[in-house]
Image: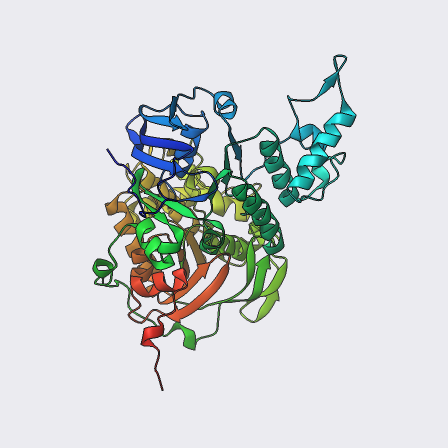
Length: 522
């Protein structure tokens, strides 16, 4: 049974938690999503829930809010045991949640959203004047300058999130859960949100804050619980945990061991040639700050950073999947704008998305059809690929990538994750790209398939292709990349030739820890 330690022996740490989740386990089929996880939430604290994708954060939140039933464990509120079989039961116990996607009704007014289902009535009818007065009082109390009579959809997402928080305050929530509330906000909007959070914290509300932005965690949170692979790692006070240590706990590997890993790919002299692509000031509001990047033939550029750092956002802008607000792209000295993926494909750019299921795999089509989708799209649907060409291409790539089963007519949905990923890689290689952008190409696949894909990436670069390789696994990025770009909080913070760069070096850069002791002194 995993029990959070008493992190500090002070009267503050000895306070009674408003909510305690002890030894919580949840299983979906053969997958153990939570394995004996314990969390304590104290009144008057902002508690950060930390962990990479798949760590169990969302599952834990859904267990607390009654979306998921727990298989084992105990939830207590102010010392009394509770069981939540529905979200309504959780809300009645004083737990409110504001999600990244605001779950309010956009065509209703601010006041109607705040008091939906709890409208004051007079003679059987809704008392609109009282509803607006009550909503205005709550908004003013939180310092939110919004007309309660205005329609919610007229306001930006930041204001809508504040309205969602105001609704939670109106129901007198003991615990407020904020799940990635800042992912779409700019700096000024984040500060407004933090002002409201601090006010609620000072009034005794326990706030759960989920965010991948480390700077925000250290600005607003008091305590953190770190999860990894569905298990509790540690509970820590934020003030007593360095960012470097937090990154290490989230990733879960000893830096000394990782430092000894060898890179498989040799360094190249690619930068001596003419760039294939140059991005200057490429950015998108609330998504990615202005970023410079140059790609050369025969080079693997690794993009490193934690989830939410801007890795995927940069890849999508380079492929035209999202439209940049700022900056320009130059292809072999010719300035161009990418208004769509089709424009990128025409310029020999290929992109394999991190979301294999939603943006890659077409489960009801065959392996052959999946493999030829990009080539057929580039030709146009009125120019079908000749059958002999289809057969030759599919057979060649099944053999080259060792796709199993080696059956072109097998349905894509019946393949393993690793073999699906190989088919998606083949889809783009068939288009003969000059630039290949791979976003998490080895996530969730077995070690054998992972090794084959890594070897193929090195081979493609050796043949002159420019590869952008994105992975949450720093060892993998370092093993493959000739040049390394490090990202954090939606911006590029470092770029360097991968000349014996260690995982420790990257983690210290991501964590923002200057190694002052290594600096020369007069």
